[in-house]
Figure 1: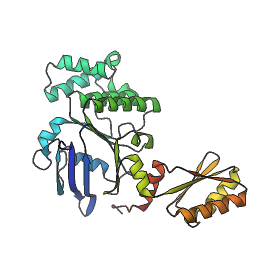
Figure 2: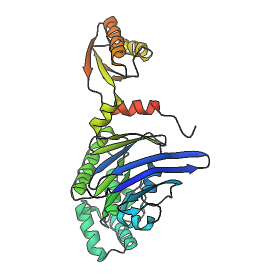
Figure 3: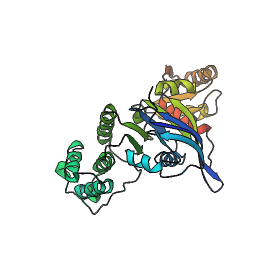
Figure 4: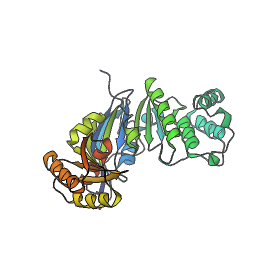
Length: 310
């Protein structure tokens, strides 16, 4: 087997007496779309910046695209496309002017042809003279993706690339990501959207600096060992009363309203079912077992984590 695109072990980053990344190890195969999940402030962005050579780890080793993480950061940067969380292009320049600037930074030649092809690939040709500052979130996202793929990187690092973007634009973006992966580009993408995480080949969950789960979505869901029940047929007042009762009931870890139903999750399947059926019977409601979702797992992992900045 070929060497993974990313293979890092024991990455640590400290700021003063706070450890924001705590011995994180991640492996991403070539051509894989790997999701990077975790609550705000969990260390995702810091980890991504260490992987692309923008930050030096305080501890840890690894290789990215075959280059040593500690000694060959400059070589890694040339082979990586990094899309930051915040739109970082010149808002008083047009789309094509921004791309011409980026082409110059990378020394792309012939720059005009490369930019024209990039505009066509991302559907930006008709808008190329629009000022970047006047673009909607979805078009800004396309411009950012165009800029970080123009130099034909082998690895894309995308830091919450679809935050604040409408569902249609998000879907089109992910279709493009899968097209790039099919061409052999490796992708590591951080996201808070569970539907996006489910479109990844594998996911990694980091909680306050520590990697706590990794694998395919079915593997991570199964590894959480959660059971889920749905309570149906509740009125508004009944739903609130039963939710409050179940919050402190044995075996219950999560209670959440979904429309006219209650979604109840826990690790102790027997105690959970007993509590749920007793509450439903008291309200004359119906209980059905349900599949545990990735969102349930996400919430469970968040609740178990301890804030490393506290």
